[in-house]
Amino acid sequence: MVPVVNNHPLMKPIFTFLFIVIVMCSFAQRVPILERKLSISLSNEKLTNVLTRISQEGKFSFSYNASIIDESQTVSINITNKTVREALNQVFKGTMDYKEKSSHLILTKVPVKQTQATTTVVIISGYVEDAATKEKVPDASVYDKKSITSAVTDEYGYFRMKLDKKEQEASIAVSKKDYKDTLVTITAPSNQYLNISITPIEKDSVIIKAETTSIDSVKAEPEEDEFVLPYSDEPNVQNISDTLYRDIQISFLPFLGSNGKLSGNIINDYSINILGGYSLGTRQIELGFFFNLDRGNVKWLQVAGFGNLVGGDVYGIQAAGFFNINGGSTVAAQGAGFGNLNFKEFSGVQWGGFSNINLSSVHGVSIAGFANVTNGESRGAQVAGFSNIQTGNYRGSQIAGFSNITTGHIEGSQIAAFFNYGKNVRGSQIGIFNYADSLGGVPIGLVSIVKNGYHKLEVSADEVFYTNLSFRTGVRQFYNILTVGMQPQPVDNNTAVWTFGYGLGTAPKLNNWLDLNVDLLSQHVNKDGYTDELSSLNKLYVGLDFRLARKISLATGVTLNAYFTKTTFTDYPSLFVDYKPNFIYDHTYDNNTNLKMWLGAKIGLRFL
Image 1 (cartoon, rainbow, N blue to C red):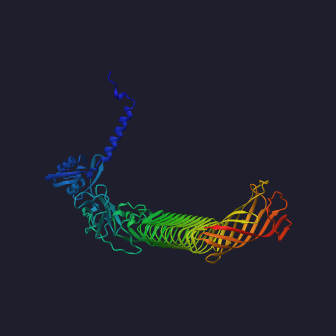
Image 2 (spheres, rainbow, N blue to C red; image 1 turned 90 degrees about the vertical axis):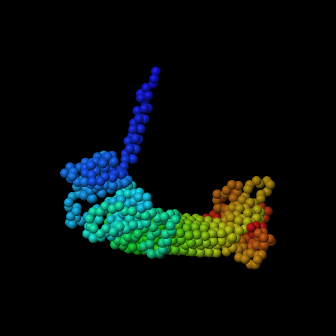
Image 3 (cartoon, rainbow, N blue to C red; image 1 turned 60 degrees about the vertical axis):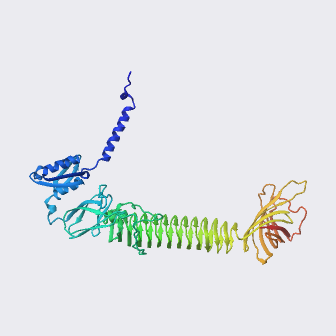
């Protein structure tokens, strides 16, 4: 028995899918009637025969009123690989309009009023082709500088644009990336059909452009590492290297305004953008109720309700409700509700509700609700609610709610609620934790580490705790001390007595082998695990540090001790096992706090 394939349940959806694909492909590949290529050679043939031949070659049919065709008219035509549009233009000399509908081309007579002197608009249309290959050139810019009228050739190289007839002469410019600019002058104020040839630029040719620092200057093409704006792929932006100027632009959205499709090639003195605008640059004032986009430079004043996006330099005042982003140098007072981002050098005053990010140097004041991030040598005063991050050298002061980080040299002070980091700091650091490779001032904090500063690891004994381990870190003028200690107990008493503490000190150098130490230390004394009551041993130490060898020294000195306890607590450890000092002060205050004071001594070895 032969199986019936068509009855398989999968066949129907498969055939349906194939049919849709075939239909879509046929539509996608369909060439418009006017763009189909012909090769015809006829001499003194009746017009109707010529139209029949054209329709046969182009595989379509004409539709027209017989009254508009003179059947007795003879026509000669000789074309090779030309479009239907070009053939009909040669036949009718601009007296007919063409409109495509399905597989028909509808012919209509051009109204007489369009050829009369009272007509205010003329139509310029035609093709742009490669002078070398004769191939049509798509996405070429065709424009009139004076009237700011433009068109872009379609995928078949065809363009159509309207010009004001009041001008007695028009200069039509044609520009295309990798082609030489071409200028066509039209002297007759009437409809024109043009075939414009443009010459490609040879790949091995060298184009030399003069450099300029003018506020109006703009590079024709961005470098690889240059900030790229939206609409950079628009044909007019890619093709046109000329700079056009206008007094004012009024725009609703990019390319929807008084400068039309050429807005990205025009520098305006003033620009008013209802929702948003796009231009090559602004020389005086630009106001955008939502956003402003400028390919090039902006000068004096730019204000946007949401954001400003500038590819070039900014000079003056720039403000936005949400962000400012600039690809060039900025010399301005710059403010944004959320943040500012500058790709190149910034000079001025900068404020960001959330952050300021500068990818090059900063010369001025940066203030941000959250963070300032700078990459480059900078100077000024930075203030941030959370953090200042500087990846280059910095001259000035940094103040942050959480941290300051500078990877280069900093000539100034760092002040943060939690953490400061600086490679080489000329000033001081104030924070809970501080770190620097080298420090010219004083670090003030809970723990301060200076790589090329003062570091001492000490093993010592005193009259109370026979084994102590301490670490001093900071600079000679001011360092932090972290310490722990242990007191040995009699054999019949296994109770552990230990202490931990924190202190501050200074170590002025007396000579190459002798230092003076003055320390103030506070320790909490514990019995067993932790004594959860007032048990504070405080010491003022004055001693000498004798250098024995490189990174080894002997430290010894005297201490003034003050031990605070509560008389209402009975489980304190016994401090004096082998030795009981003479108390120079022993008093209990009204709040049941007892203070004992005595003189003691310490001796230890120091390393590092």
